[in-house]
Length: 364
Image 1: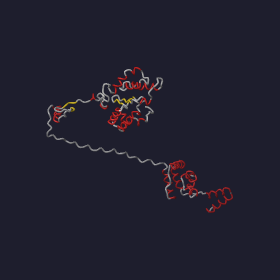
Image 2: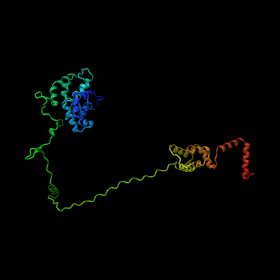
Image 3: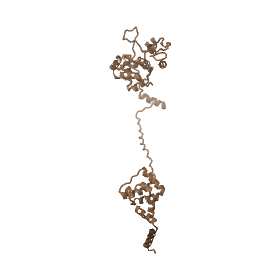
Image 4: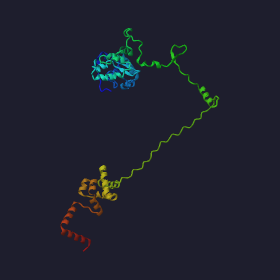
């Protein structure tokens, strides 16, 4: 398939272009397609299936035949339906030129393309038109004139100008030999095709009866027994899907979400990041303790937790601290931590606190 083709602007303004335009848009479309078809080549003589022509132009078979006849009438292009070959006579002149030197690199391609169409009925005309200018082989040029004129039914010199010897329409070419045999009815001048007589019902019944018992079968008085219609098939039942197993992090999330709704009056956010954090907490504490620590986490009144609205990230970060508070039942905030720090740094103060704790318990 060629990558590009040369189309002269004179196609629209020249004499042939005006004639095609007067014949209708379908003739113009088919003419332009013959120059730019994916099946075409630079010499304008190429294989073109009729099916491809109809499909790629979007026209029906009858419309294509009508357009081809109009195009042939102005000798713009010709189409051989039997061989499925198209020829645009002036295409090689526009794509290559009038003269092709013997050493020109295009000459090898031209010889290859025309060599593939040696059996085409347009071969002689092409060689007669371009044989000398393209330096085609001498044996091709010998006798090309008579072969070319006979190929497309050009004017016989003995005929008056404008008279063709028995022109055959394009769509009737190659079909005359396949026409069905006709017979004329008595008293009628119009031949009509022979049609076989339809077999009679009685003859068919007797033939079938004779094949069974050797005697004709009388069908009078017989009643036909109607079989009941088959019951409609029930559609196959879809298998019942078993419920998906509960995720390991579900108990932890349930405890956390319940405490969160109680503390803040809304649902917590759950996404892929939260699921990953719950899985890590589950690995650190186990299912039972993780759920209990998560619920205890929402009761912590530390200013930092409250300001952040108790996110899962802080639960995962401080899980050891929160577990210790859950086990001991105490809560350590920043004030208590600083007091413990001062007590640890002053042994005397620590002794006083221990004595005070004994007196409160009633111990000496």
